[in-house]
Image (cartoon, rainbow, N blue to C red; front, side, top):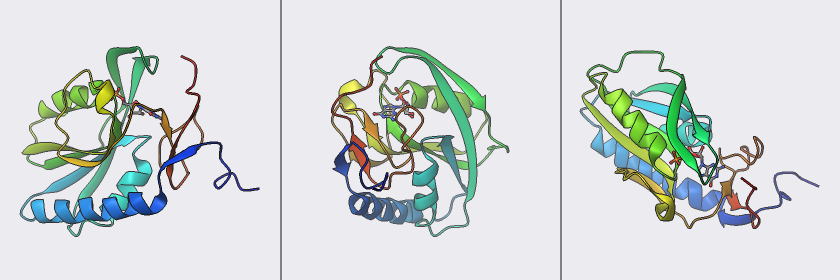
Length: 181
Ligand code: 5GP
């Protein structure tokens, strides 16, 4: 019995699909940021695996930093109020910031973060998200680097949790019976 192999989820994206796409994203980012001062900003906790893998495919002397957010409300009834629970550890003045996120769902978190970080005078801010659920977007967000567009399902694994657990699955699965709100 293996928790990772026998977890009760249907596979949406295999480990191989995820890793292949991340390699492509890393190569694209490497080209685009040649003459820039890149800071990867991971949004905790969901992006921790994505950022770790992505950063190893970016062939540049980049900086890594993290912030953490929490949003009020339930999964389907987002209140739109996002709170920064942990801030960056350094200044981003004149830096080229690439926000690294696990998933854009309503888009409220990303639009809040873009607005917040823009006040700190970075040279540029872009978004890299592994997943996007267009069917649920409320706030339009321009995702500059996107891994996969996915259907409106509650997904789990590769950083994304189900009630705090299963973030360490190497693939992305979905629940046939989404959690009650
Ligand atoms: P948004 O602000 O775009 O609605 O959502 C942002 C956050 O909600 C994501 O960073 C993620 O933590 C959480 N989230 C949204 N959709 C899912 C999902 O399908 N599965 C999991 N585990 N978390 C999700």
